[in-house]
Image 1 (tube, one colour):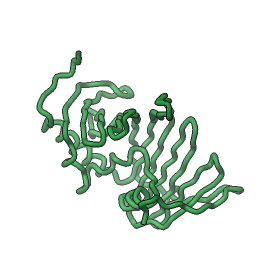
Image 2: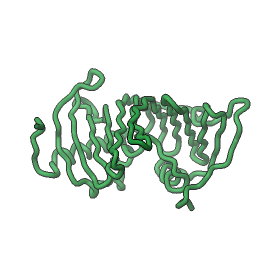
Image 3: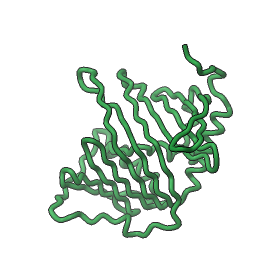
Image 4: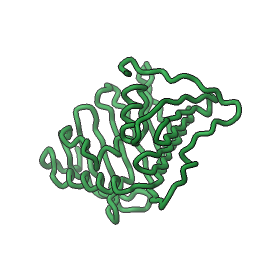
Length: 230
């Protein structure tokens, strides 16, 4: 028996909270985002593994991004300087690069469509833009209140055809997400990704932080396009 009270399928207050979150994210022009992540990996025999890690962002809109992702099993870095994306695997001592369009948003879209390369938490940055997928929401409601990292948060849940997701938004100050959880509804095993988030506005981040310099001994390799890549 659930203690969550069910209201209308789409609560206007939940959609309004999502809108405010998007506006708060979009207003951050230069920032750092540190996250502690956990993802369920489903093996061929349906055994689930919980893999934990971190995903740390440094961004300077509209055209600079650096992301470092580390888990129990992999270490990856993405560096975007407004013209080129470099994706490195320090644990394998290799890196590759490709030409990129002149904005973070367009770069992420090309990376996903052409190279099947996606970043954790990237979906959050669609909110607050003209492409925010409000039309895909099938259900939206407030779950309750919580404390995340010592901060009060409002807990919301949402559903679309392909995924369920939850957001814990800061109840005081800018309504930035303090925690995020996503379940893939297209996978019968229903693997979950979740992350706790810490946002830090920066007045400036210098260009050299968005420049990739391969360490000695690292090998450059070609970037394979996805089957649908153009």
